Image (cartoon, rainbow, N blue to C red):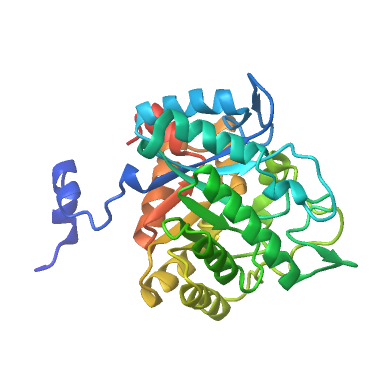
Length: 322
């Protein structure tokens, strides 16, 4: 035999030398949840190891994360007063605004802050926009999303990340930011976001489950791949700076497809259900948590992700997995 692939697998140094995928901790972004109050570090039952933080404890936790090497976070707000139009989403005193200001005061440009832009945690019906009857009003919602993104930018966010899946929201946000001299704030769009069953634990974390129906009229059909490319290309045209595929684990084919057909940096979101399933199986002793997590990270990287948003990031660094 002239070709023996096993020759290049013969020892650890050889395997490392010829590895085709190089996962880097610099690709990691850590999702976090901020709420009102003081001294709060409240564990989330469905997501072991993840908590709600008040702004003061958020600063302490981020200080620890930065000591580990994590310097990029994606911030979600919870615990706001809810109303039909989600007005707390763009209130300059809300938890996200307070959290961003506290973090920037503590860490300045040493910490990169992205903020989630969506109405679902702020509306009393749990849908991602303003309702007309039982339908989400797309164009009316764009105004609220743009106001929310602008408020986050004014508080100090480096990146705003619209996750609502309204048509035209990237353009609406870009136009608003530019008109207010916020051209430096980037948009990381949840471009390819599916109506997925993998979001279950997050609904507890963000208190954002819809009170009726589902989100299938605005989030994507899990069966569609050509539509994913359409969504990504539309966001490119509208001024997105970073694209995203969400969830990650069951959609690595689309991470690769979007990567191949666009030129922007690409993020993937290793979502709550993917995280909690690994945690639950590891707790039962059914899997090797470290091995599974690192295999997933390598797979996301191999598929083409430049940025990996994952709740596993803290474990990976604090436990010496990378």
